[in-house]
Image 1 (cartoon, helix red, strand yellow):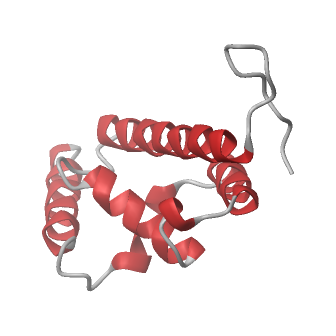
Image 2: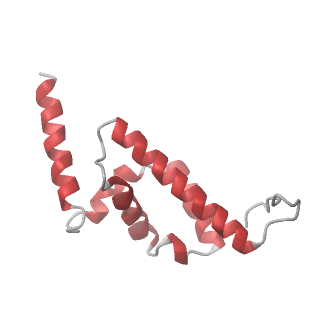
Length: 116
């Protein structure tokens, strides 16, 4: 288990509060990776955040809304060690993200052509 953090009232947080905090933290970590990858030209708007969440859902076999406290802690640890962008192959062939993948390939080719 994780360390219980004090709530604003000074009481230790409940498991439910810890889960909510970790879900918010995961959302922030995902958003940070999307922004970093957008700035590096490795992700696309508007699909990036949704695609990255879809990757996490595939890696962990469930949405974070259904994860236990221990699973959420593991997810935060995984995000600290891994880049979601490196796992985008897990959603390859999913029609919801095909446009994103095509656009990324086209943008990458254009970027490479511009460097010559």
